[in-house]
Each structure stands twice: as structure tokens, then as C-alpha cells.
Image (cartoon, rainbow, N blue to C red; front, side, top):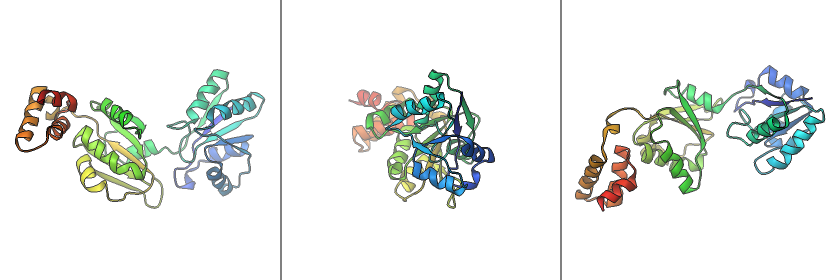
Amino acid sequence: MSKLYVVGTPIGNLSDLSPRAVETLGAVDFIAAEDTRVTLKLLNHFNIKKPMISYFEHNKRERGEMICARILAGESCAIVTDAGMPCISDPGEDLIKLCAEKGIETVVVPGPSAVISALAISGLDTGRFCFEGFLSVNKKSRRDHLESLKDEKRTMIFYEAPHKLPSTLRDLYEFFGDRKLSIVRELTKIHEEAIRTTTKIAAEQLADSGIKGEIVLVLEGKKDDGSAKYTLKQAVSLAEKLVAEGAKISDAAKEAARVSGFKKNDIYKELV
């Protein structure tokens, strides 16, 4: 029985495609690609001629069955994404699960990963970390996701698109307070850059600066500092002080929540 090869592709610099990856792509019977047009450019660069089948979020169920059927019939397949490792925050994850259900052997051919590459040059703790993918555009899902991470002590890694970056930087400051943050962009490309800053500076000075490119955000985990020692009573007292100074109740609760780590709604209820 043939196999499914999970092949990592360059995230910018074509020279990062490994000799083993080139050999594998040249040896398989067909290639499952997120975008066949993007993959064709890569194959042409290495003079590889192979039939391709598109496999992406909106056709993954139908195409997954088709791919598995061809492998079970004796063909070998390589799955690739537009950039980086397939199956990481990627619909290829479903194909791996389907192969496992059908007893199809899978082999990984490692390649570049934006997650690990960004973490390596972030300047933040790398011993323990968690990858959180893209934040949802749905407001409730987004807030629930961020709320669940407020006490996360590991370094957190997010993917983000340039047009959503401004709101995300402001959200990170709102939910996590002032922490170290690295904005890593255009990895392995000509304009590669690691902006080592804080959530406060990012929200107030960088959110509207027009940062472009493929972006990875690396956020410092929660530290056991003074902010963790607030009691709810102290948090409410802080909010009351802000109200006395002229702040709106909702704004005071929001600021007290950011500083203390308590939920805004809990502080707001105590205020009213």
C-alpha cells in the first residue's frame, strides 16, 4: 500500500526546500495542494512535473475521500500547503485523521514552520509555549478565546493578517495588560523583521502604523508579579477611584480588569 507524505514547503525563501522534500515531490504519483497555482510555481522552480489535485477548507471532505481512495488503490500522494508545514492550523489536519481511520500510513518530510521560526527570534521564553492559531473574527468567539488565555503562563503564539492586526493589538493589551510582545513579519523574506515591543506600545503606537506582510505574534505568558495579587475588593476600589476622577463606570471597570486580572463584568457588577 502506498503512503501519504506530509511535505513542508518554504515560507518565503525557496532555498529552504530540503533535498528530501524535492526528492519526495518528484517521486510521488500526485500532489494535494492548498492552491495549485502557488504550488505550480514551486514545482517549476525545481523542474518537477506532477499532476495536482486541489485540497482546501471548502472541499476537504470530498477531496479527502478521493485522495484516500487513490492511495488505497496503490498511488502515493504528497500533501503541501502554500507555505510551511501542512496540517498545522490547516485543513490537512482532517486528511491525516481520515488516513488514520482508513489505516493509511503517513510520513512527514519536515520543513519550515512560521510558528517555531517566530518563537526562535522573538526574544521571549521558548521552554514552554502554546500555538493559538488565528483569532476568530466573531466577537464572542474572539473574546472567549482571549479570556481563556488570561492566566496562561506559557509563551503564546498567534497568526494574524495585516488588515486585522490593529484590532488584535488593541485586544491583546485590553485582555493581557502590558506584557512583552514580538511582532514577527515576513519570515525568511527580504523584509524579515522582529519588532520586540510591549502590548501597550503596540496598541498605542503600532496598531495604525500599517505593518504589512505575513505576521506572527509572540506574547509573553502571565508572570507571578504584583498584578496577580489583586483581590476583587482592591480591583473594585481601583475602579471606584477612576470613577471619582471622572471616568465612566464601564471604562473604569475595563481598566481595573486590565490591571488586576479580574473580569470586567465582575468588577462592573460590584460598582453598580
